[in-house]
Image (cartoon, rainbow, N blue to C red):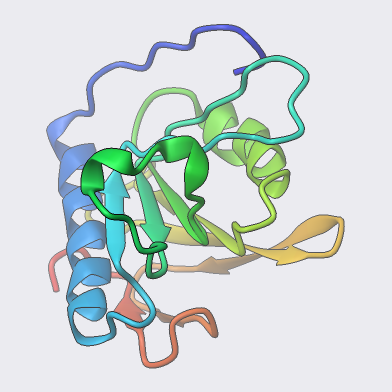
Length: 166
């Protein structure tokens, strides 16, 4: 980030559990709606085109619409594709990274329409979803508490009950 190397600890089991839960929800939706989601990448790389120094955040999840046709998967490079949705799982670690630094970074990538933070830092069993939606020069942030159902215009028909046990 801005030419510096940032190292994060390996996810704890609760963090990994939430990440897999959310990834599976998105992948299952993508399986029935391949025109909307082709790939849900874990630890994808997002290149910021306007950064002065190299800035390549690695979100916990990056969601891609159908990718351009490539003759071979070997030809695909992270810097040539861009997600429309990124998500971070927050259980421990640096809260400011996910809630302060990253929204600013991801806003510089015009393809990213939404940035989600699944926050289990208070209770992994009852996480809260923060959804940042792109609005011109900033994000609007909506909170979806545990037990609520989240929908998004980005993924018509997608419903996410905020409950990792379901």
